[in-house]
Length: 229
Image 1 (cartoon, helix red, strand yellow):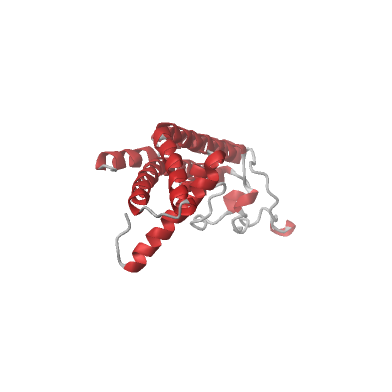
Image 2 (cartoon, one colour):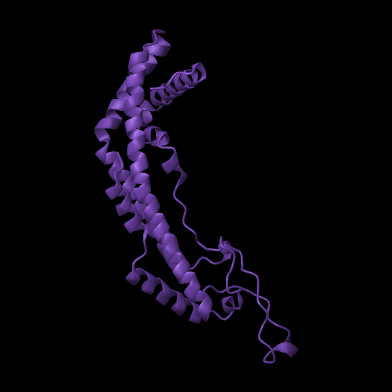
């Protein structure tokens, strides 16, 4: 169960502190003054140089603006979230071992003996629900890491635009989705069942088959108007 205190803790972890904001802006101002990132942008006509301010430019494609700082932030997030995933799997080792063992029993009962046992499948579904809940809870922490990284990038690019000779010509407010190097949480966090397969090749066939049987039964229960357990 996710309590109010744990939710508040995630919110606090996702908030960027004053020191982190200062550091991101400092890197941004330094990179901008050095002309980083170096991007080819059209210069104003020769006859207009020095007479009028250069016209605004369109925001460059985000994929053209990957700087060492952006890579540093992205690498840090990937390392942190991978460590969180590894720690989760380590904490839930007993549950995962039970799930894989029960997968073999479910497949044997349903496919080999052809003798369905709904109670056993419901028990398997209960343990699978525990695993998915654990991943959901851990994902909220991982998402807080991602959100904080994107806040750092936003501070960084805001400072870059202040001092960069070309990017300073951007409109004062670029499009809301303009955040070069934006960090996204790996999609596997939303498909926790995949981790059951990826971490134990020896049980992969039985686990994937048991999950299919469980989902088929849950679908049948929904169609029949019963509540899936």
